[in-house]
Length: 84
Image 1 (tube, rainbow, N blue to C red):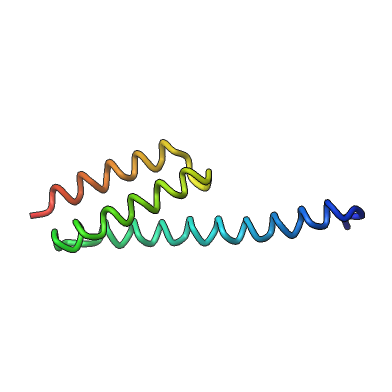
Image 2: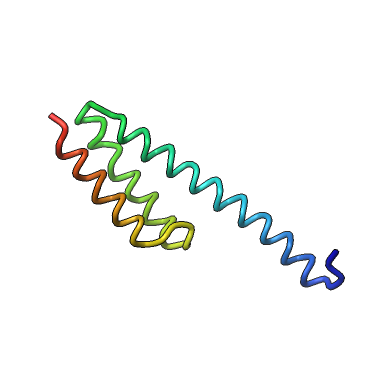
C-alpha cells in the first residue's frame, strides 16, 4: 500500500485515467465497427466525420497511436467511397 499522500493521489488519478481511456477506446472500436458494417452511403457519409474526429481526439491524447488513427481513417474513407 502507498504511504505518501502524493502516491495515493497518483493511484486515484491513474485509475480515473485508465477508465476514461478504456471507455474512449471501446467507444471508438464500436463506432468503427458500425461504420464498416454500414451499407447505406448517405448514412456512412454522415458518420465518417464523427468517427474521424473521435480517432483524432484519441490519437491526440495518446490513447491510440497517431499512425493507427491515420490508417483507420484511410481504410474507412476507402470503404465509404466504395459504397454504391
